Image (cartoon, rainbow, N blue to C red):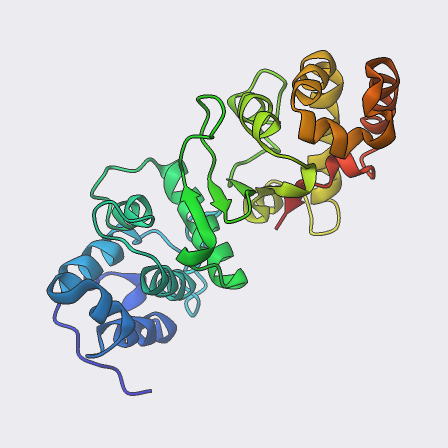
Length: 280
């Protein structure tokens, strides 16, 4: 591939990326006249690319063996994902992609945790080919209640992204993540099939979990949450008539029988009530 000269800031002379061919190839692609990136951003493209590169200085380097920040993509993969997102979402003021675009450029002072979530989210979008026309909202408030979701697709299918170290800081019954699940998702979804709760694998593996056991461990944490918050979780499900019918089926006419069934479900992480938990 012929590299297109780029006159922006790019990387300082000491940067690990100045000889990283995969990264330089991605920068060249973005900078090429007529590229989707340049076309979408117009005359502001060079300034935007400078900001994106400077804000991603701590990423992994594919060719130089540098580990970079755990939980985030390598620089070349990230630039591919940035290209995909900007090409497929409106990032101007008021657009569905505006918040993520500001995070990419660090113009809204995102926290490290928000940037971790950004990497996880746009990687997932690119892998699944999610486009703006399929998205109802990003980072908006639920129709019912005051909590916020990450991704709501057309048809009320939700995805929540959690790029956190649940090994060192396990999910607990009193956490904000669990509060969001109970008072956000359980009050709004019609079926547990409408929710994907995705924990990022990279941080979990960095602390000792493996490809083979990470999902088991994550479901075990959720099992503990369901056991500790059984009354609250059951009551919220019961008040959501659609979710109640979906989960309890023919038993939904009897609160007593449904509670017995619920108590049995939460004892086995292979049951359908835990299928919303995903690790990748």
